[in-house]
Length: 219
Ligand SMILES: C[S@@+](CC[C@H](N)C(=O)[O-])C[C@H]1O[C@@H](n2cnc3c(N)ncnc32)[C@H](O)[C@@H]1O
Image 1 (cartoon, rainbow, N blue to C red):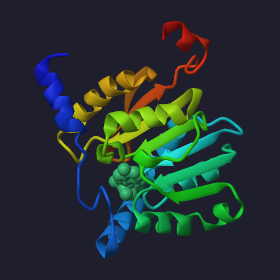
Image 2 (cartoon, rainbow, N blue to C red):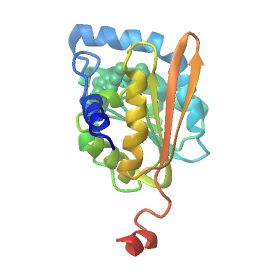
Image 3 (tube, rainbow, N blue to C red):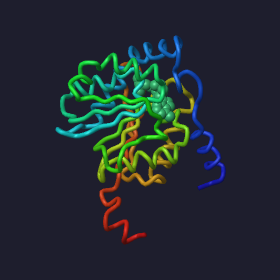
Image 4 (cartoon, helix red, strand yellow):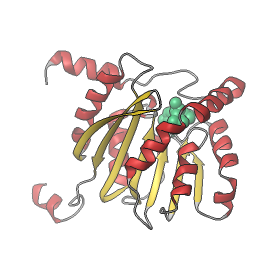
């Protein structure tokens, strides 16, 4: 890769800070309230693109106030829906929104950073991150953690808003390089418009041979 491109990727991988990265207190809760009202169509499109199959397990990283969880529950296909967010106020909001599904044992929401996920290797059929990768503190390592907790052949979907930030397109291009570097295969990107919002959907898969005889062969 060209040195200039490498430098740009470094800059784009550096996490953004502020209330959107770690919402807290009254202002943080106000952010959550806004996300719940504004990001609905985007969460809808992301959950649709995840193409859940009956009985699958799914993890959402950076669930915020929990709108995508509601949509996953409504879809009725997932056997287990786990969601994490490192902001206690968002975990509380997401739990309040999904109280019934939590009570029924369908949903498990935890306060946890993407960098400290406690899940065993191969725990999930699908992982979803809507408007959250730009805040991950150690993007390259965090992507590897996502790969590890996916089942072989498991799907990863990143959804990002394209309209709010001028650097969004370059961040998508950086992610299209970072995912294969982390070990994902079949990495693709699609753009969609949901209501007036332009959304990028970036897909990747854990190779089906990961941890299997192929790995031993190439090691
Ligand atoms: C812009 S909000 C998006 C919320 C939700 N996905 C949506 O689209 O409505 C980003 C969320 O990612 C969470 N987040 C940021 N960095 C994180 C990290 N390192 N680990 C877990 N969650 C994180 C924030 O706390 C925040 O709730």
